View 1 (cartoon, rainbow, N blue to C red):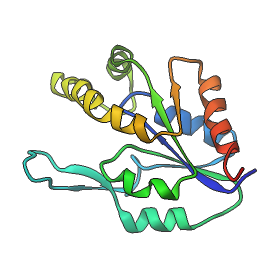
View 2: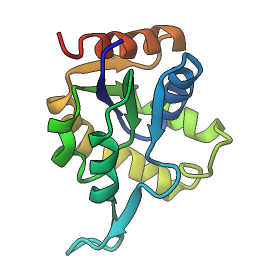
View 3: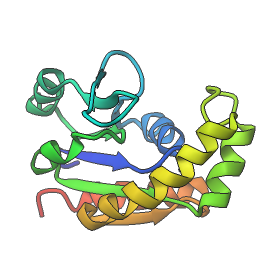
View 4: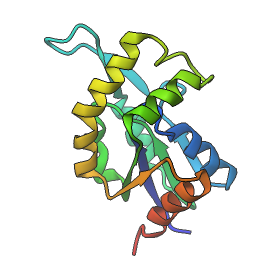
Length: 163
């Protein structure tokens, strides 16, 4: 297996955590930056809410530590572009907004997306942010496909690492 790092990114409820869990089940090294202490919230002039960003020092250590196999990192934060040159592939997971809203309404892992304000934010963020993610992605995968096919596609992107 190749040594490298793959970023799995996308909007809320496209399936990043589900894909990462399956990658881990298949024996891959994974880090979900929505968990633990990978993210800090920084104020942004002109915005009422702080913006989530990766803790640069922690991400640098993670990406500098090369072990056997490919590392899959999942997350979507404002400063991820600063790390793109550290990833061998950037995989954008996507789904139509109506699918994402349905997933948010039925998921049990957290309550984000259940309020009307959260749902409006998902719609607005998808319109504003997803095109930026798409421009920088090396692969886009529609997560309406069966999970095994989605994860196979993500693994295939990692297989191209170092070729």
